Image (tube, rainbow, N blue to C red):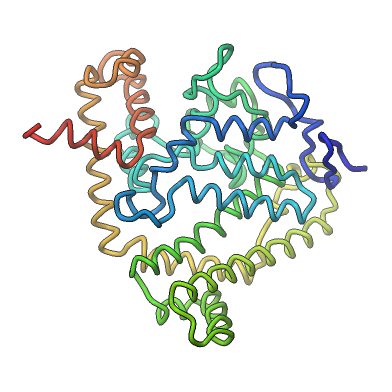
Length: 389
């Protein structure tokens, strides 16, 4: 009844590597690794993955060494996703690959950089970090002799594009539409169960760890966070058990309890949905028309309350706003300069451009800027705009 995959057994509704839909370009598979282990390894060894260590979540890299980066966040998402998948009998390696890949397309400076780049690309089919991730793993990584990209399996590519659900309507980013035309990803269905778990693991990781980073940055204190029901409950438990605990340990103990509560709720609700739907394959999960991995209604409410708190007290804090304002200007300045003077691009990037202000040139510039780390973008801006150099 269970699928086989180099020594691993899966629940009937898991994504079985032995039944993969394969890769766009046919190639011999490994005798010692499943196809999804191989996808994970290719992602880890990619240039885009290495760059995540100098791309921020909220704080720009130079603001402190202890705050989360896209790399540490991706590792934390991976750990949570694997733990959940193990409990549910799902494919841990596929979930891990999706968790490690999900932020590859982010620009420098987090969402501020993405907003600035999307604004500049508004006349050239826009910019979307999810679509950029697809471009990276199918085109922009140029490492292999026989193909561009990483030639990942259909299941990994589907999860990269659809981890938040079906991708339909007139606003679907052009890179996704173009790729779907040659390697259909069934954009109108929900993804497999591992992608659903990876998406919720992302929520768990960034909510809890942004709370940790925001507290350590002094943007809010215990009196404020205890007003958030999910946080207040966990904090009260910690204070009851350890009344004289120092603040750094207290916030850590609180955060780990938040993660535990969210994971436990997700497991309970997902098991309930699986029992109700009784899918016998990952294909049946895709065809249900609704997700099987989910929080309960109560936890969804707690999740939204925590998001609202972080948005008001952290993401819109004036200190964060000052840095994000600067970040938007850096990205906008670089885009405008390269669009008007593409000869300033490095040779390998300039060679990919066409006439100035063309769609092709704008997309090349967007690819170049999106691949920058925070530090590199600031250095480039300094070199190109500082009049004393």
